[in-house]
Length: 318
Image 1 (tube, one colour):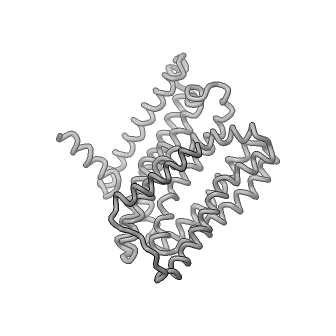
Image 2: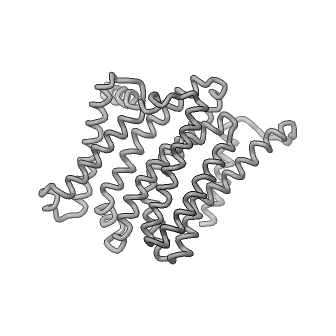
Image 3: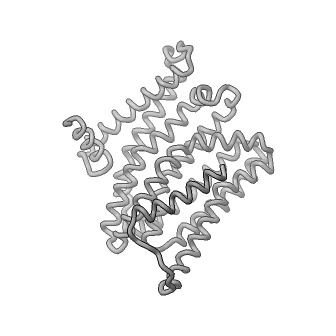
């Protein structure tokens, strides 16, 4: 594992020299500005580590290693859309944000394009994991991990909130305000740790996901209020790109819950894998159908849906 980490870092440095002509050299001309920015980045990295791993330390200390293992598996599964989709997107768009930092209008439009794409993909993916949690755990992990199901369902909601906050960090970095990220991280950590200690002691392991979900429910509005002020972004304009994915995902979740609790055909299927596939296909159909209908009813506005439809038409033309 250590050899793999070292190889990855060395390969990354080597590729950076191969892919870009810039060659760094020793110079202290911009030392003051660089240090001012870097000290906040160092603090942010420390806070991100505490945010990601502090929960593990508290859970392991209060209720043991077995509970920590259960929580860690549930966290990894429920947050796959964020770690595998949102973080790479945020890293990719940061250079573009930096070029637009002096033009608030262009930066605002770029952010709306990115957040609409993130919401279009990660909201149904995250909430979909919550819907299919039980058959997913049985198929992928086995019945011995069934206790992770309620943890996954709660953490999936946290993952959606986390995903919708993901692209905001690149905006603060692009406009030269990394301290805002640090303040938001401090708010989340302080709230999460206090709630975690209380809820773990009162309700056991199930209190852990509720604690971080509650902390995120507090930090997300604070984050977006600061972002809207920074980008001069009205709330109706922001909701204009978010309401369709949120509404479509809500319909998808309602349909998935109904299938599992009321549809006799689903109950008659003996194969857990077949149940999982049925839920995935039905959920995807419901989500795509509702989002296309709502997009049409809204007058086919600019956003991720338009780009998606254009790409589909382009592929069909080939």
